[in-house]
Every structure is written in structure tokens, then in C-alpha cells.
Length: 291
Ligand code: NDP
Image (cartoon, rainbow, N blue to C red; front, side):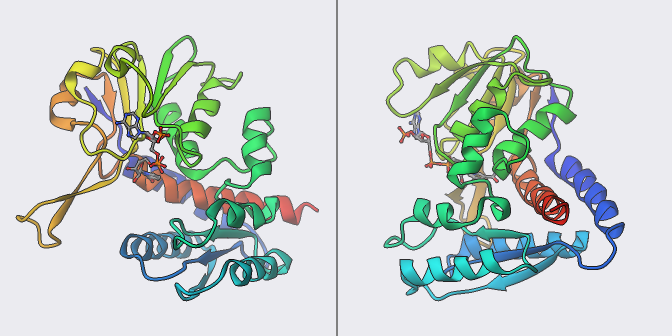
């Protein structure tokens, strides 16, 4: 069994980006990080994004509206960032407070600055296999991990657990694309799927993104499969200072011995998401500079 080390791959991507950004004369790429409210997970994600941006030489502009911001106010804030020539990428940290319609906010971000890839245009470009768009960061990170660990999806049965707009659907579309490294035969499962273990057992490559701690057990995995665990779940653990531990959607200790390759949690897909956000930001800068 080979462990796919997301930290190592992300570090390599960050080093590549740092070199690329150092070569830009004048203004450096800039990402606006919008975090509404004080959700603890969002605070730590945005901090990590800010730190990685600084490491690469990307400028970050942190915008922290209060949890009471209205939909209209948030849309105005995004309009201002869309119009600001010194901003290349805009990230609105999810989840947003309940009264706010998240998809409407994602749609408001100008497609050319949508480095999170959640705008309708960019999701459409994934379906159209159009490289001028931005692929959302977690699915892009999964594809990069597969590619850099030498996993070609051609002719493989790829089973995706989960159909969210953020992970399941776009990663399924990417695995399906008619291009080198992809060309998978894809099945997507969700909460209404019947006989789920019978389907996951057919997977040559299993991508688990359902948000259920240790849901995928050894009896659900074909020996020799490649398993990508996207889940990040907090499980109460009295032995930890924080009172919880992080676990994936896969029961690692029983599944790992069966696999040819597997990602750990933490240290698998997680670090890739931030690296791909930075890659998209640098791409946005390049595309805007070309116009
Ligand atoms: P969502 O909650 O948006 O989607 C979960 C999906 O899983 C849904 O499609 C749901 O089905 C399906 N599902 C839930 N329970 C079951 C079940 N018992 N059997 C089959 N399918 C089920 O989650 P996300 O896609 O946003 O995230 C998934 C996981 O990935 C979470 O743990 C999240 O924290 C993590 N994550 C990690 C990231 C990273 O950087 N590593 C980034 C983003 C997410 P239905 O549609 O029918 O409701």
C-alpha cells in the first residue's frame, strides 16, 4: 500500500507557484478572502489561505463582514471587488450564515475572478472541457493528486461517493473528461443510492466525499483499489486538547491494508485544496494580464 502524501504534493505546487510569481515584474497577484462571521473552521481555513498566499508572494486582502450582513450588502461588496482592478481572485468562504443564499453569492463573483470555481460559467466550462475556466479547488486537487501519484483513470471504474456542487459533481465530470489522465467510467452515488456497498466494491478508484466519519469500511472496497478520502469530520475525542480529532469518510485502519494507494486524513486532499486555490489565483492574474 502506498500513501498518497498531499502535503508533499502541495508543497511542490506551492514551490512551483512561488517561482512563477517571483518572475512577475510589478504588481503581484492578489486574492480577496471574504469571511462572514466567526465560524471556527472558516477562521482556520482563511488563516491557512492567507499564510499560503504570503508564502507564494500572492497578496491577500482579508474582508471580514459581520454575521449580520444582508444578502444585498454582501452582493454589493462582491460587485466592488469584481470592479477592483487590483484584485485578481475572490474567495467567499463557505459556509455562509443561513439566511444568505450561498449559490446566489457564488454566481455574483465575476467568472474571471472566480478562483473557487463555483460560478455557473466555470462549472459549465468543466462540463465543456474548456480550459479557460477555473476548476473548483478540491476536485482539481484530487485530480492533481491522482496524476502526480501516477494513477491514470483511463479504462478504470471511478466511483464517486457524494454529489455536492463543491466536490462530488465536479470531480465526477473531471474524471469523465476526454483527456490524458481522465477517461474514467464514472458512477456517482448519493444518499438515495441502493446497494451502495455492491457499487463501491466495483471501484478501481473510489473517491469518498459524503461527510460521514469512517463510513467506508473494508467490506466496501475492492482489494487493490485507489482510495481518495475527501472527508474532514470532527469526532469527539476526550484524549485530545481540542476535544476532537479529525477523521475522513474512510475507516482508514481497516481499508488502507487493502488498497494499492490511499490518501490519509489529515494530510491528503486537504492541503491540495489551498494549493489549487493559489494556482487558480495565479492563473486569474495571468489571464487578466493578457487582456
Ligand atoms: P455535502 O454535505 O454537501 O454532500 C454530501 C454528499 O454525500 C451528498 O451528495 C449526500 O447525498 C451524500 N451522502 C450523505 N450521506 C450519505 C450516505 N449515507 N450514503 C450515500 N451518500 C451520502 O458535503 P461536501 O461535498 O461539501 O463535503 C463532503 C466531505 O468532504 C465533508 O466531510 C467535507 O468536510 C469534506 N470536504 C473536504 C474538503 C477538503 O479540502 N479536503 C473540501 C470540501 C469538503 P444527497 O445529495 O442525497 O444528500
